[in-house]
Image (cartoon, rainbow, N blue to C red):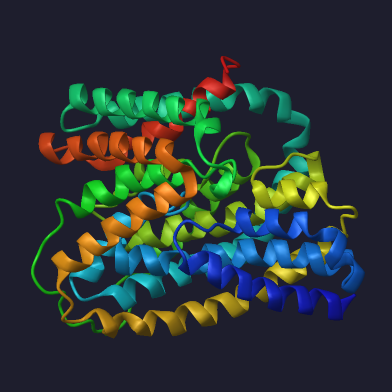
Length: 403
């Protein structure tokens, strides 16, 4: 079995690097492809290899996906808010530092995943019915708190509400999108418009400064605090129904400001991203709930291997992904001297084409609407976190049983 675990982890690292570096491709997509090919793959490999590849892809993706978001400013479902401080550091010539902080946060998340998973497995299954209902109240309280402490509560409420309606519309009519991007493909134009194109249209121009790395400028206390807060947030969204890494990003904003503490925020959201993967696996084995596409693919496989085998594959993948992320961070020097305006317009063109490819005309419509909503916070001088209503409102609606 050990050979199968290692082989699955190696293949999973390769798949995770591809899904992490190529915007629009997620680990869920890879898992769906593997599931559709399982009849063929099981002729050559056993179920341990297949499950290990799926989970290792997800773990690797949580490390690597901050690389394109840092250097290009393209968010995905896992890096929607974290892209803002990471890309801002890149524009200051500290792109490598941002990626290394992200890798550190994910590594801390791996270390804290096991005790958190054990605690959740022992305590939460008995409380699950109440948790399923109450999560909407928690999200409502967090959203209300963020709005009340806003610089302009009226505009914050307006942006939160409108983005929430946009999220409900996009997800409810996602069947209009082309099937290329899968069930969650509509999230790509939705989040890219709110946190990608809307930011790039107002981004600074000129020449990208020379990239240099002089160490991670983050005190040890901030590392510990960000790791713990991020891991707890990731554990919550990994276990609770209807939540995602984007929700964890919003929850963390109420404690760590992405504008006032950008480095700690990057570290915390990266930890949350990785812990979410491990707690999703714990929820699958403990209460038979699937929290993301990879877990759904695992549950639908012909044979589900022991949890210890899949966890070991994930741990091996985490080590490999950490080393690869540090290696990829050194590519920052490529961006020194690049014309920022040309880069931004090139990224915008790529996002538009990718949205049309994944979701067709409906994806183009969602991208336009999301960009328009995402442009408002800059005009009225409020933080972009209120655009997270696009995720938080649908979660509340789902939790309250309205849809």
